[in-house]
Image (cartoon, rainbow, N blue to C red):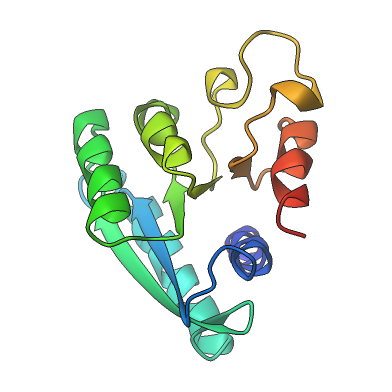
Length: 162
């Protein structure tokens, strides 16, 4: 629970500088169905609880969280990412659990200049272009919550918003 609330806190900090609009939109894509759905449902509950505790605000701005079920399928995740970006016009895409799903949505989300926050997944290919993890190779629009993975990439993404 503390990790998920930590994710929400990081998102709140970064979201403040993302949009000049009155409302920040977050597309929260996670697995809500099937055998792995229990993980996503707990994540959804944690985000809803965090929003309740923060009075529905992120970074002092009103927030709208749009939850979508990726069904743990890369093709579904890619379609949902495109919908979140083009139709729902979200500022942030967060919540992805699985590496194969992150790989499916990484390019569409970051090319649209949206912030991508991964709750867990983080294959090297989504962060750097080759095996050497240097600050210049990290993607500036993608960050992960887990501290032990690619700290340099996480800090590069966060520096753009702090």
